[in-house]
Image (tube, rainbow, N blue to C red; front, top):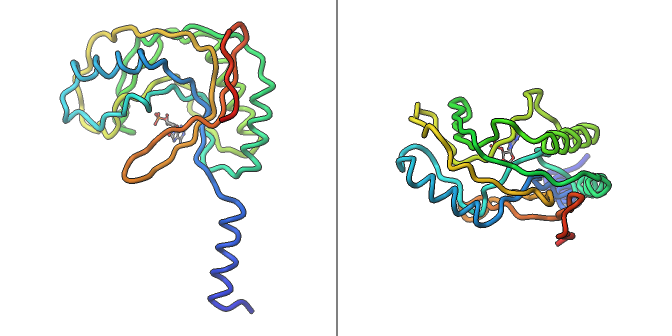
Length: 200
Ligand code: 2AM
């Protein structure tokens, strides 16, 4: 029989052996695009509309993985490294509000095929490794505000920020000192892109 102290030790050992990290694959937005979006957001939304996502945290999620062990992350990273796909252009020309989740977002009226293919591949690889994937259709978007539960007047148009996706990245979501930060763990180039980046 295990006494309370032993149980604690057992539990601590298990936690220490398999630290879980909250991970997701995403497209990074160039700094200039992040800054332009934030400026445009300030001009078009009142402060009470919702919680503003920090410029450095603006990204476009491809596949959410949830809480993942190091071993599983390693396998997913190896699989991501075998993806061979061309880069593509993304234009953020759509805007919407999901009142249920309180998210106000920028998206694409016509998402590029490459974006949908990349997300589909990463999501099916994740599902095969046991990372729960929502059955909702993938709707590529950049979350601008959270906690926007009330009706809000959306601007009629976005400022059509566009960028070329030259790589995709694995991110870790870290919550510390009351703030969430998204840190890039590793990036992979999309074919036809000159710049490559590696594990950090
Ligand atoms: P969101 O912006 O639409 O909320 C990091 O949390 C990223 O993963 C966010 O972009 C978030 O999408 C997405 N995300 C968080 N939880 C998720 C979930 N349960 N299912 C799908 N995506 C999720």
